[in-house]
Image 1: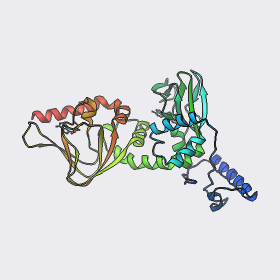
Image 2 (image 1 turned 180 degrees about the vertical axis):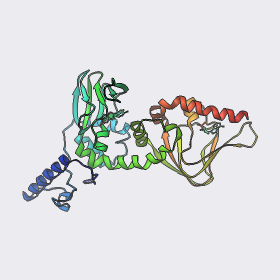
Image 3 (image 1 turned 135 degrees about the vertical axis):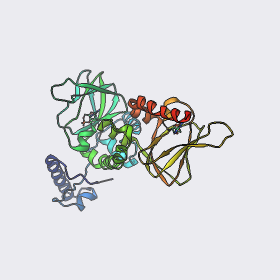
Image 4 (image 1 turned 90 degrees about the vertical axis):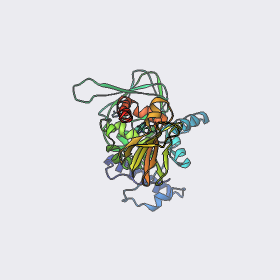
Amino acid sequence: MEVSSESDSEIDEEEQKRIDEEMKARQQKKKGMRTSVSAEVYGIHNVKKPFIPRVIPKTNDQIERIKDKCMQSFIFNSLEPKELKTVIDSFEEKKYTAGQNVITQGEEGDVLYLVDSGELDCEKVFKAGDPPTYLKTYKPGESFGELALLYNAPRAATIRAKTDSTCWALDRECFNNIVKDAAVKKREKYENTLKKVEILKSIDPYELGQICDALKTENFEKGETIIKQGDRGDIFYILDEGSAHAEKVFEEGKAPEKVKDYKTGGYFGELALLKGEPRAATIVADTPCKCLSLDRMAFKRLLGPLEKILQRNSENYIKYMKK
Ligand code: CMP
Ligand code: CMP
């Protein structure tokens, strides 16, 4: 991908950089150097600029390590190979000593970080004057600092190296051109459905964004079995479109009984993941269904804080069974 669109809300500084880049591309062209197609297509007054990615030389070992980390990261793992190469080339190695701030809440930010080694703590002041609240610890393979780039907002939290750490820093330009559009679209696409999910109502907008990044869409036809009682279960589902029902065989050899109906915003498949047991019921699509799914690892990581609520809600199944 050579060029992609940028949001209208880009800051003036970006506009300036854009013009500078355009000028550079024109000069290159004049000198007869090969330049990107985009530089020829877009005029200097066009808001779209040619994207000339930076290439920071790396050893094969570094490239492999970044690739491996990108594959674990929801924000990078859906990139095309060519896009991934551009991103890898653009990453810059940054080293921090324990106690050093990488990001400071309230400051402007132009970089997203991917943790290579070490651990970094995240804390946030929710109300001016209040002490910061510890939120989480970032480990290798996780990324942070995406909010300032996605929403052109000041840094929403502070990230401090807990141990000596190495991070890969991705510049705003590369992020905007390669990663942002897909990430923003995915978040917009899923946020509306997630807002209808009762158990997610209490969740922080940051966590909600993280869940959006990790979701996948699965479609089912009318009458299709989405989950089968007794199977091993590794996926949690949220119903995005359509209706479905749960049915359960209470005694071997007996016909299943309908135990629950689902509509948009309903969720199922949490029990097998919470308890490590086989699927406790069968879920059948009553109409064509579009489901959002989270795999076991993402479920544990992102919905871990909701485990108590999920457990409490699942007690309703037991009440129902006893009726
Ligand atoms: P950014 O706002 O760019 O910089 C601080 C980062 O902290 C932010 O992006 C997120 O990547 C990360 N972060 C982790 N938890 C939260 C949270 N609850 N609210 C805001 N940011 C968070
Ligand atoms: P899981 O056991 O992973 O897969 C089947 C799902 O059906 C289960 O999680 C619940 O989400 C859902 N379900 C709905 N009603 C019941 C019920 N009465 N007993 C068990 N599971 C139920």
